[in-house]
Length: 373
Image (cartoon, rainbow, N blue to C red):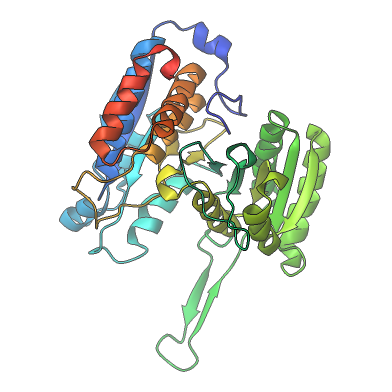
């Protein structure tokens, strides 16, 4: 998805034009590790684009994350959640430190935000850009062409195996049994597929369902029936791929795909494969969306907190800046979003900078030029 594309739930250009004094409340949740470094660059780029396109951003700070948890024992207090609900969007850096046990922040902060704010779509564009070296193709020694890898993964974000259903009995004995249950509701699947189908209709008209219907026959049947019905209603061409075959084709023949829709677990996995094919997690943006706009959406790079390089000025801010572009598009500022995307392309075309500071200087130089190009 290009930042300027019209997407279900986006504010229309007419609505934006009708409000010449536009101000958006955006909560900046920098988090841990390299999160503050990369989102500071993204903030500066957003402010530069805002000045150019006649809107302002009222930035609010939120200090949640691993360090906050270690200092206070708090993960996501209800009072903070209530404040976050008042934002138009949330720009998140990364959360996690080695001193915090696994699952504390993932479930207590990230997943809770998805559930509480009803962020039922996880949007993961995968686009190979000029100047970024994708991996060599197995057995060929060649690489993907820049215009041959440009697809979007729409991942259901609140159900499936991440819904939290399951448990453990007889812990610590030889009869210990652990279960994780995948929850798939008609309403939850349908609204995710509807979003993906509408996005596909605005691109090439091709939608692919990725699942494992030959083994996961109950959930797979629900997804297949809904996808077939919704694709017919939206007038898009529906294809299907088992998730293992989809992984193969993403590597060998990514032109097969334009918009992929899939469940929570499969989407979590294949979206990182998409990132690997397009230069790595440092270039991968994401949006956790509430298309119904009953609450703010959350935009974040997906590279994690990378504590091993934190504070050294080595973090690549491209994923954060592209995530901020998705945020601007969601807010209706399509022209500003396009500027951020074009600035990334222009900087990469000259060779990716070696430091976070050099990235920021190069991006801001581009954004002060006409159209960010």
